[in-house]
Image (cartoon, rainbow, N blue to C red; front, side, top):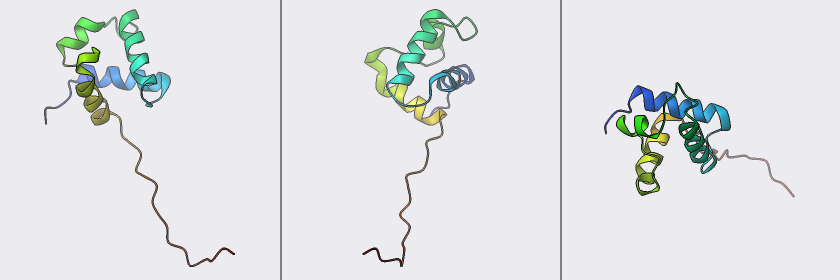
Length: 86
């Protein structure tokens, strides 16, 4: 798998720090930040040049990149218990 450009990675982390990592809120935040150039003056074109497209046509690639950048919490584990609830 291709590594994520540091600029794209930092942009994703910046946006997730502002609104959390739940989808689609994160996508909305990424679009807002890019549209207003709130992250180091970077907009859609600059992000696209480093491999991060916010186009809905490329949403699956964007989701894969976000998943690679943002650590996902492990699924809840099942703990066996000898305790019997009546």
